[in-house]
Amino acid sequence: MAPGAGRSRTGRRNATALAFLGPALLILTVFVGWPMVSALRTSFTDASGFGEAEWVGFDNYVQVFTDPDLFNAVGNTLWYMALFTPTAVIAALALALVLNSPALPFRGFFRTALFVPFVVSLAVAAYAWTYLIDPQVGLLNHWLSGVGLQLGNVLEDPDLAMPAVALVAVWKNFGFYLVIFLAGLQDIPGTLYEAAKVDGAGPWRRFTNVTLPLLSNTLAFVLVFAMIAALQAFDQIYVMTGGGPYGNTQTIVMEIYESGFRKLELGFASALSYVLLVATLLLSVVQFVFFGRREKDAQ
Amino acid sequence: MNARIRPGTVLGTMAMLAVTAAVLLPLAIIVLTAFKPVSEVNAYPPTLLPQDWTLDNLNRIVDELPFVRLVLNSFLFAGGVTVFALVFDSLAAYALARIDFTGRRTLLIAIIATLMIPFQATLVPVYQLVSDLGWVNTFAGLIAPRAADAFGIFFLRQFFLALPRDLDNAARIDGASEFRIFRSIVLPNAIPALLTLAIFTFVNNWNDLLWPLIFTTEREMGTITSGLTLLTGPGGIVPYGVMMAGALVAILPLVVAFLLVQRRFIESIATTGIK
Image (cartoon, rainbow over the protein chains, first blue to last red):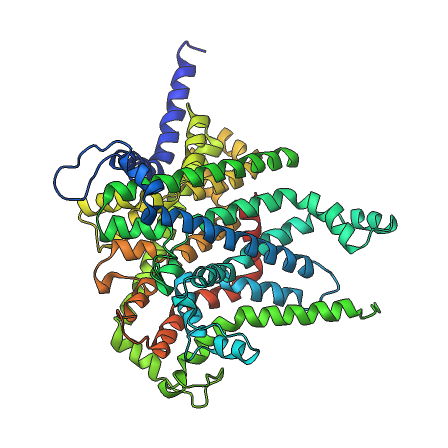
């Protein structure tokens, strides 16, 4: 082989690879890579879209975590996450366990029906929910008052507005988590349950000693996935409360939308964007550690 | 088989029926309210079923909104993103799975890192960029920033890696170009993965609110999802009947499509999460 032939072959391979990668890399660089750098720079300025932006150091970040009105968005997002994540994950797991039982009839029907909300737009579903819990003509309010539960004007109620919008997200997403749980449950060998039964383990023991340990990777995956989804809450809140009452449902993404696109406080919006970014990255790293372990297990 | 019906099973079935009915209630409300006359929509006590069925709400929605246009926009936006993303993602995924180029590992890590970035976090600079390009209120502005995405690249790369290499090695020995192998061998074998990604991308974009809300300021350029938010005038009484008629049209294409492919779709979704 002539000297340099290897290098030229590598060169040709690199050129071919670049041709394949070119369009995607261009899009990702221009619309993800560059904006990330740009947002980081903006987050240290008082940019407003007009005139020269001035360097303000960490002022915007300090504001995110100290200004009571603005920290509100971070605190609300955590509250939303605390309401949404366990509810959605537990509901999904419980229903997956029931659906996984071979004795249950119409399993295919139930699975499909419970998954339907996942293909429905959260914003559009939010209108249906708004109507259902309307204080005057809402069907759900009417039925619940029939059993003695007076909800009143839920979306104007400072205590109930957040649980309400979180519940709408639970409705939309639990079917997706359920399907992932079902896949995980079907990977557990039936012989393990038989063995546990022979050893005299009841249903609860079988759940805690067989199902939970073998489902732990799936559970971790779904938990982190749900937490990331909670960090990005926007659609149904925009439709149902607009962040109210008294800013009680103003989440991080709602605040990014408002400060970045309504009030044009670009510096502050960018700092808040980075808080969202770092929080998501931290959760994703946790997810990838589990993910990597699972991949290794599979090999 | 002569399985005994256990009380546990009966209880479980009844519980599942109740849960399913509750989950489907908002969807039932959309369908039923869309066909109710205004007097019944705002009546107390509220009822589930319409007494008189009417098409008034569906007629009115066409007057209130450039409705046909919005639905068309949704198809063009979600469809456009899906087509571009599928082409660009699969090309990039092929290089990452099959071509041994310099810096492949580094690039893969960069793509995985990109995968974790929520689009909401870069919304402000992306808007400025789109605005500087003069693309606000254009399909270019709606589609171009999403014409490739890290999740799709990663997902397809994983699938391509799992395909047996015997076929493409044989083709390579016969002198086939990489593009030919990509087009004639790898892509035809990856149709299930491509379909899953296509459905996923289409559904996400069709349903997205924030993106069209930001990149379109003209009524005529919105999607059906963002257009519906125009119906709730500030401080005005929400015309629930009209709203539900709009909601019905917004969700109908996806729900019908889903019911047609549901088994396959659910099974493929289950694997996108974990694999």
